Length: 582
Image (cartoon, rainbow, N blue to C red; front, side, top):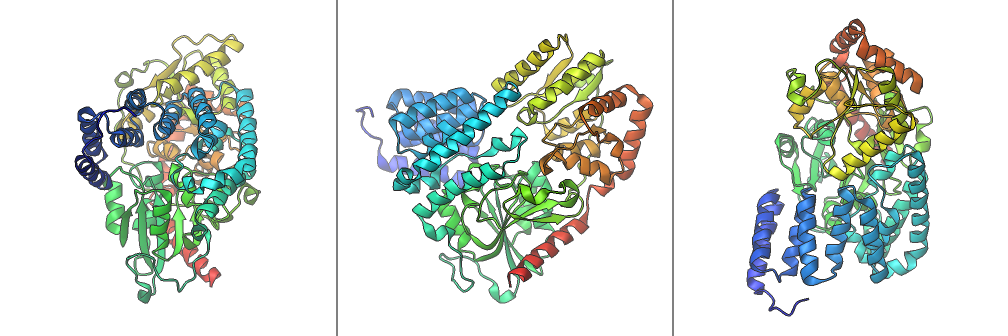
């Protein structure tokens, strides 16, 4: 710490109070401006530098966050909070090796730090160089779990660190393997740390236990108290999927509690907030958030997307309600002994589905949710998006980290067989992630000696409206192996665009196939990689077939959208859970 005089404590506290109030109201941009001004005028204020870096990272402004962290580290020297944020920021930019190196170096200097011990062992890349690289990282991850399990007695000496552990296990699910064992082990480590820090958070609440803090109670009403907790209650895939589970749930039978851990506000957030009986913004650490939820004595607590944010794994390893459920916003088992039920979809699961989950699986009809038909975007021109007029456009519009190395051979086959083909992808937020994927594809082409000059195109990140416009320009959409489209496929089908798919072993690779069967479009479901490539080329190259498929999708897509009966199914499932519990 420099020898400069510390900032006036009153000024610092006023700054923090104003910024915190804006942050809690969802105005993270204005909070960042306050912290930036504070750092400019009081560069010696370490707390302000930490807060600035944290808020920039939370709002996904990673280059700015990295710059702020670098400036603060240069001024203050090594600081564990800033170093942990730097690991996160590097990782989110696709610089996984740099992130791991920083974490490994910090783990040696700060052996008691839970964050560095986890990250130095468990960080996974956004994009793998090939299948062998993927398998090597999976083995490295498993070895890291074993090391952490052995370290638990020493880590538990400062167990309260678990409440601020800012990491998730998000990327494991994209490796295309059965993650049940690894997820259970990961959850067990978290649970052991929470037990050591505050065992009350994992103990079952008795029905008669009073709330611990002042909170609304309506047990006299006889309604079932249902909570929903998550970071994605806005217009995104998870928000669009699960909005109507909340807004259309029968208010005469259920008292709805929404615990929002995010900052983004939009029309979806407003509708959810208006429909909920209690809408609570949670912006504390995992311990305070868990206590706040637990105080409401819920009958059922639902996590729509465990694993999509750093805090959801911690909360999902606590016992905050009598019955706790997860859904497929992040479609992989939580592995947590605290989650009783996993909601999934009958049409999307394979026959052996229960062997993929630690939770008891409850299956819904259809796509499981009442998904609003997206607003149909007008068809633009290829020129609007810099796409060639005469080419056959094969879109693969998923996030690049979702595209498994097993897919590379299919891309090469298409380019080798269709000389008019252009593969269209979308850039990642980070140039490093985009370049890593492009390099992998270039390598796969080189191995087969396939020259693809001008046949691979990366579109920039687009608004939701522009994205839907772009999708309608595709001759065919390529559904990724092992990680099927959910919201992206629904966007495509809303615009009557054909999607070819190869169903995977797990629910997360079978969503598009289920949607196609609901629309009687089974011809788009391939049985193997060869059939997948043949189907894609036939659809792109045969105008009559392409037209017929679009007509079929247009006629039958209502099977997917605005299915109010599916909210009724959800409601009945909740009632059954309460009846089963007794």
